[in-house]
Length: 476
View 1 (cartoon, rainbow, N blue to C red):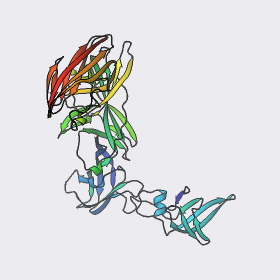
View 2: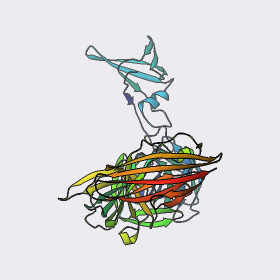
View 3: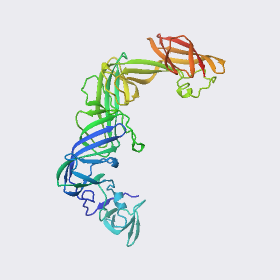
View 4: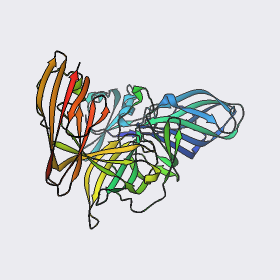
């Protein structure tokens, strides 16, 4: 379909086109509570002047993604200042397509430039779906070139999404009202940057809030609250996460936190101390926290049966099936720290991605991995998987199998760990056992972590090798 310019002739639009111009002021106060599930609660305080009797009040500068069934209005001066008789959300917006659709059956002009002069044809608009059809005295025009001039603006159109209330007031006068509603496509997330020192013993952490607003409205000079937690919502109200990645920063300079944190019901609320403007189609980043010199512990983990004998296979295990050797040789690298005041942290941390950098001599920093964390209360451990060790290799094999009776087997496993680094390392081997099991012999001390997991920590000398063997008896 050709591009069409629509001329609006003798256009006068008051309010919504259906009611008189509203007597309502711009917001004098905005409170924005954003949830990390892609929606927000907006509260606005507006001056309101009503006449005695029925008033139609329209507010045209609301979010385009508003949930109409969540809208509420109340008087702040007197709870009985007015009664809400009707509440409407109008979103049939003025644009060329809607104007043409609502002008079917009306007279229009077609203006075309031909041979150095303008030619004007008058007719009746018959259709605008899939193309423009105009009945003229000379015939039917199909998708005519040029511009279509509409002689009058159809009723019921608004220039932007608009809330309209029918209010009944007991008396005339000015007052103040609070308008509140939920809107979608505005969300936030936390991102963290962690810089580990040269000895892998301390870490500086910077937290950032990334706020993305695609709700269709700008919130001027707003009080900003961020709600962290898993708030239950009906599935039809869930929207995708539109947040973006965080910027890189160092926590070397101690700064006062910009957010005040407190518990609210079973969630946590982070309130920005200063007001801010959140523009439509804007991504804003605000510093959440800065903690330096946090103790951290690096861990090497070898799960020889990962991807070969993981928890997903335990339920379908059949004794005697062949699984004599694993192809997994990767030793995973983790870092672990405690979110406590003693460690210069202690703030409940919203879920997000932690990007980890490594410092070396000369102040150089290099990216070494990232992992996500869930909502983490104070005094809980944070464990980050950063990647796989280059110079540490593991091998896992079953070296013996014996069936004792129809429901009991005995198996011997060998775990080989080789360290090609120029210093000793400690590696924890993870083993998965099923059903009614017991370890009858082991070359190294082991720890039962849970009903199906055993941990075996060993220290491997530089350029050395350690072999772990154990025998397990399983009855089912």
